[in-house]
Length: 438
Image 1 (tube, rainbow, N blue to C red):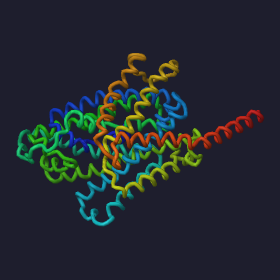
Image 2 (image 1 turned 180 degrees about the vertical axis):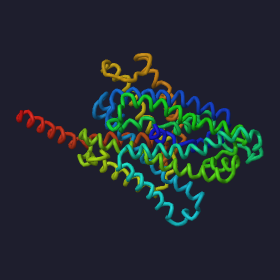
Image 3 (image 1 turned 180 degrees about the horizontal axis):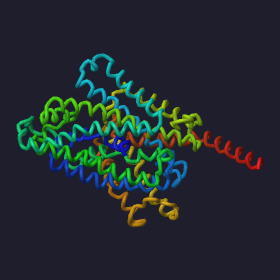
């Protein structure tokens, strides 16, 4: 549950632009509706498929079972492609909060070395196994949530006393659509917890409970701090990217400001750490299925950690640190959303093709309930597609850029055909040898 918290959220950091542009009332409406229409259906879908098919590779294995090798490969490709734009953000976020406490790290290449250190440490924790990552996530989630809990507790005693703070006019109008897209990004990543299915104790019961509990915790971690600051009278215009620490200082003094900055560092570290665990299982599962070289299937004999996949992925993300990626929210949503739609379609397909498959948790309402679960997330993703035309990447709109990445996945699949044929021949030869021995 704690690992899922970091794969999805990492605390209220990132909600500031919603409040600044939409105001308190609309921001809370956006956060509540996005949780109900986006997060909850996705958590239900992960709960059912995760309990029915607890597999290494998670969503990749589900799509492959439902639609074959081609679509399974595309599912993994889209997720790994999105990680290139996403994973460089979290070490950078860690450094950004660190420099607020110690500006010395902003000079020269010191920040880059710190970011690289985050990558190395997280890779090391992941090599130690998922138990270590899970325990680390538990402690980090408690520590970074504590300052927000203090804000929630102190805010009623400061009711209306901070109305003078930063009373500047609102300079942006996020609105319902823009705010929803930002909220979708903040609520994105529920399926990442599925990729470690074979390493989870009693996954048939653990996944549904963890998904539903994490949905509630993530939603409250966004909504309650916003409502608490509203009580104090701080105008919505005081919210801007990274302003939670300043708001905490206004409410309780410099000690809470420092605690929020430390929480931001823990948030960046925890998100990167948990997502390394998730993404590294995709090359492992693909290698086991003959879609990548067998070297990616090597695991540590004691921890079962896919050490080759972890090191290669960590090396790739480390190379991206110097590129200075900005958070392309819409592009992330489009790439991630395409893979998510495949998962919802797989949910329905497996209900039809394998009705007798044991499901410890089942979305209520029969086949109609499974279909309806994907309706609102798909509609929200359609809005993201429409909005992507306004964002440009390398001189082209976001939708075109995302389409090119998807097409590259098709080319990569056919380029790996010789590898799959070789693995099939090898499997056939091993089967014949076993049969001959018997």
